[in-house]
Length: 376
Image 1 (cartoon, rainbow, N blue to C red):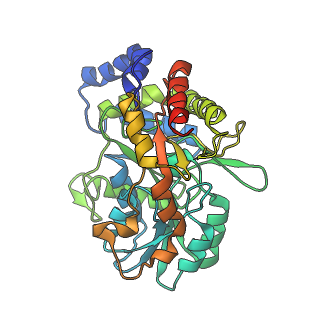
Image 2 (image 1 turned 90 degrees about the horizontal axis):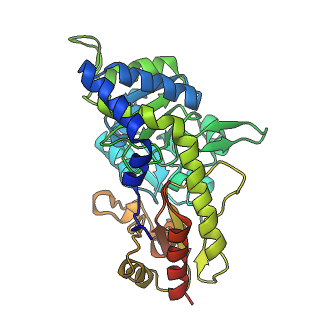
Image 3 (image 1 turned 90 degrees about the vertical axis):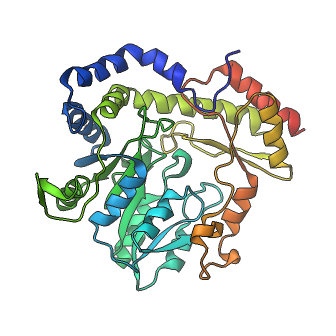
């Protein structure tokens, strides 16, 4: 059996080596390393894939989220609601911009932001909601947009983990995650479903005026060289990373299908165990693209299970071990432990197993057998 990786980027690359290498070679031949043709080609191709009017590439996913907020003109002290159970980048940029983060609890089944918690957190100072499509599962964007519209709030989708996932609406229509809110951000970190070979990110919007503002912000506030019209930053996707992404984009649906198939096999093997709650998803649906495959361990020692798996050469991880409201940088007297029952439960239960496009049946069987061996 091939060595198990949490994310097997080497095997993925070997299958697409000729395409990726040729795409990178184009950049090397033209020596247009910043804002070259490959960046613009990838931008247009991703706009077509997502069916969104504007994709603005940038240097990384955290920058993308920060720039999206800058583009909306949010002011210091404005309140921004987001999920307590997610990676710190989401709240980090809120704090960096001197906005007021308002962390709220999540839903136990989906692990995405709780609609009831959003409603309870809205005050006259609230200006935006940042739903995170966690682990690859699309949040309930239809309901979130309804809440936002009722209260005249911006919606900034954090789509770093769910590119390619679909959001379903009650009338039967679907839209890609990241194309529904006023603006969205994504990350192209190498381990993402669509990942480059370094850092990269992008902002999406259907708002022409907002797109114009953001295009200036990412490039030092310039629309014309040496004319600085807005306060900006230096955040550009380089041409080599765009070349990698453009080579991989046509395979994104296949990559997401491979992840879903692996998740289905995991679920089939593990769902009968009384100590395991597997992620729920529609096997024929497409609202979950499994950036991570995350279990909940009930009435058993999750940390000891992790040690057991690691001892057998099976990588695994806990995303996320500490709630954001308990992180030293974001502790605030406004937060009460009773406001976060689900998040506080999840951090004690969750464990993520290897998930990537190259998982083999033999590996999945060894992983699941090893989990069940411990959780007898």
